[in-house]
Image (cartoon, rainbow, N blue to C red):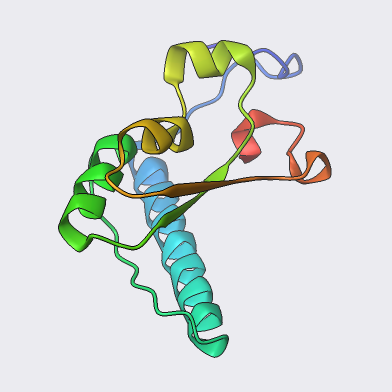
Length: 120
């Protein structure tokens, strides 16, 4: 396999174990983020819940909104480029259109956007 940006290498190999380790690392990062934001909300007196669900984020989010029936939903907006937005769509746009509650979409500042989409 030849990857653009890796001109000095003939190939890159990732074993199934490498992918398991990446998945485990990403799951731990996600858990730490959830714990951090839940504790911050509680510190400032905002009631909140956090959980991890499997599936398409758009569908899962709207299903959970229907189940929990929150007063409102706050989602982040990563600021995808026009190409990504057309082919992938965004979770925040989907939530605004389909969630059964008011939705607040928080745009990230331009200086918070990573240069490499892989870092997002």
